Each structure stands twice: as C-alpha cells, then as structure tokens.
Image 1 (spheres, rainbow, N blue to C red):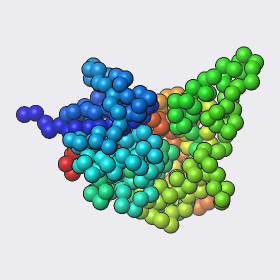
Image 2 (cartoon, helix red, strand yellow):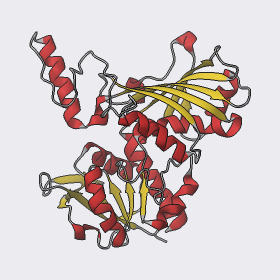
Image 3 (cartoon, rainbow, N blue to C red):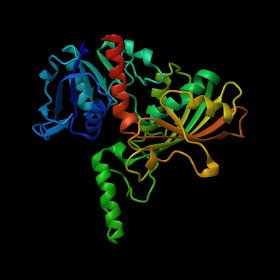
Image 4 (cartoon, rainbow, N blue to C red):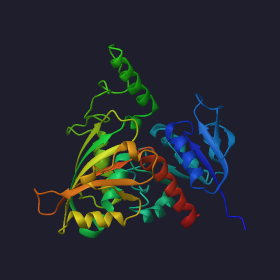
Length: 340
C-alpha cells in the first residue's frame, strides 16, 4: 500500500537554504508528491536536481501555491510578508525560515526537540515560524536542563559563521583572504569591516540599548519558545571568519543544584544532541567537524565556580542545516505525521 504524499512548494529554492531543503527532503525521504520550486525573476527558469530528476524553477507569484499542501519559505522576510499569507489563503501551510512572523503572537515559533506541541497553533494563520539559527542550537541544548533543573539565567556569546549572512558574504570572505595574501587592500560590502582574519562584534543593526537586533532576537525568541517571558538572557553576537557553523559559549545558572556530570549524562540521552566532551584528548565540538551534520553538538561542560548552580558549555551546529533547513523540514514532518 502506497503512503500518502504531499505537494511541496519551496520559495527561495535557488538560495543556500533552498539547496539544503532539496538535499534534506531527499535524504529523509519526505513524502513529496508534486515539487514546485519558486524563485525571483533573477533565477526563475533555471533547473535544480531532485532525486536524479531535473526540476525547472518557476517564478514566485501570488498564484504559485494553488494545490500545494506545504510551503517551505527561505526567500527573505520581505518576500514572506507578501507571499506567506497568500500561500496560507490557498490552503498551503507555510513553514517560514525568515524573521517576518517569529514574534507574531498568532504564529507558533517551533524547534521540534523543544516545543513540538506548539505546531498545533498553525491553524490561526496557516503559518509556522522557524527561529533564528543561533536561537535554535542554544534552545536545543538548554531544553533538557530547563526541564530537569530549571533555568534562572543564561549568558551566551556567539561565534557565527559568514554563511549566516548569505552566499555573497561567503564569497566576500574568500576574496578578502585572497586580497590579503596578495598584499592588496580587500574590498568590503557585506560587513562593516574586513571579515578576513577578524571578529566583528556586530550582527545586524544596533538598537538604542546598545544590543544588536541579532542579540535581541535570541532573547525574544527563546522566551517565546519556552513560553517564559521573564527568562533572563544576556547575549553577545559575534561574526567570525568561518564559512559554515555557529559556535556558542553558553553559561547557565540553574534553579536547582547541578553538576557537570549530571548535565553531560542528561544531554547524552536527549534527542538532537551529541556530546563531544573529553578535554584530556582535545575532544570538543568544532565547526570543521560539525558541518553537514544534523545534531547540535555540546562539549566543554564544566562548573561555573562564581555562582552556586552554574554550568558552562560550548555548543556548535551547522547553521544551514539544523539552524535553518533541517529544523524547517522537521516541523513539516510533524505536520504530516500528526496534523494533516
């Protein structure tokens, strides 16, 4: 007996996350019926490969979602603002990877390992939001600790790769490295400073309180995901000259007493997490090892001696996979399993 299939549209199919959507849909054997690839005029008409077959990319238009069951969006917030409601009106449930609907009270913000039950809220607008990449990997690591020990306060510093700013940012880093090795002055267009061999403590624009929009996203999204508007989170977001993979130094102050051994064992048993933590053998998560892998990796788990119940840990994940495409498709998998 054949299983039911679902018609899937991808808005932003020719971008980096769109490519990850296609790869992961195929890898996980998602029950795709018709596959509709959509993009702007710039790349519409090109072809992409899915399961060995060439698929022509269509132009993203208001009528593009007729007959579609699920829409995976990663074409920018301005595009989602216009087309996600149009898709929902056509009966296509949207899983949106942009920032446009994340803080909408009628749109669930979901990380499947953390709050899968929130998916039920899609019925309000027909849209489910995917959190920011830096938020996703942090909350996956925090969830087991939150449930077992309670969390009083989180201090997080991120080390985010340039792929979070798009393919043009990756290309700019390459050109800057080439220029510096050729003893010439590198151009900069994507970032406010030269990215090569540098760390820039600014992601997105600064707000009046001195924090960047990226940092405030981590605060607001984490509170919404945990349904805890009083949760204390102090973030610093930094761009580093790494191509793929975000790293985070996470300090957690828990409500109840906690030991590194308890956290290590707890995380080993938790879904979506892989613990790499043997400092004596120089084993800890690194972006070069975690790229193109699905898990959130945690290591350097140790006691914070400055507070009574404090733990430090190092969290790494592929921002294009778990931080974007994989999380989106995991949401779609729950949709087809439990709701459609």
